[in-house]
Image (tube, rainbow over the protein chains, first blue to last red):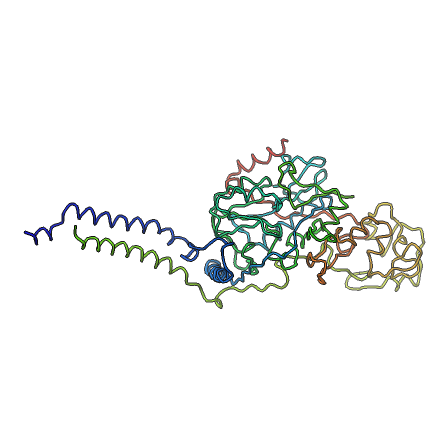
Length: 305
Length: 211
């Protein structure tokens, strides 16, 4: 009798076994997206927040990311992680009397910062403004004239203003974006969950979202990358201008300044009283965009002569 | 309760987990570095050439030939108060637009033909255009000296020896100093929804223009 019951499948034991299989299946299904994560591994899945990483952690992550870019894009790249220089505070000034709306800065930025070519992502928006007004609602950033500047217009390039009091970092639910000591607001692309709250909070429309995996031909990839700046972003994260910090933290100029055909752009250290940026703030009538928003931008606009 | 069933269930669960981990681990194999495309970048990935290129020596160019100004002007002089250019210099006359400054010898030296001229009549070397332009454009020259007018390539640190200020003539044509019109690069790409439908794309623009 006892042997008979042993071989029989009882209702209770059947249910228990079934529940076991269901639980195991559920765990499997929960982890299933990992299989489809083209840019991810378990290491990437369990990666910590940037500020909690040791030097060795970062080195390991960089090696992994370089491998992933090699696998996904077929390009050999180097990722660095330059740290902010002590005592330096970056600021930008732009002479609106000089800017001629040629969009050379936009092109250079895309080339330097490995933005997706399709769908196209651009950090700088050049607004064509009617002369005599600061009303941004009258602007047009789709202008496509044969020749610029056009009569009766002036051009207002807008990118991340690197605010002293940034609204975008406050709304981030996971603290994936924060302000560095040199004044640059950065994003940990591996920590961003893609909720886009920061995009809604930014009064300057400076942030962009990667709706699909960035597409860049391998010949166009800039192999000189920074961890917090121009490395190729994964799908589903937010990105924005970072004052080219992989360049500027090594003493170079941002790409948009280097190419500006009219020399409208000036970049420098706000803490250095002899710097060009301080000369402009001292001697020109500078203003900031949407001052009333209380964001205290580090991006100064001015007109002269 | 029969332990055998639990063990079985656990086994299946573990197998599922193992499968997932295996699949995830598979993707961590990266191609060999040698097989990858290595882009060679000299300097920057973008073009920083100034609008008018490098500073050219003060020469008269005719086809492939180059002449020093003195080669002709030492043999025959031109009237001091002439502001109409003929013959060899007709092409300058065609584009010339420098406001009130219409006399050649306001900038070019009357006798030392390969140089420019200072207020006191002394020559200014032709490779120092800023010194010449500063005769009239004082505030602009001051800003240029400060590194605020015109582009300064090379870096933001004042101690950087690679910093280079562009010279006046690398952006401005001295005979027509107003900055030339340029063709802009392509506009900010609209979202794919706007791009896909001409109806939407056509609608968004008049809305802007209506203001």
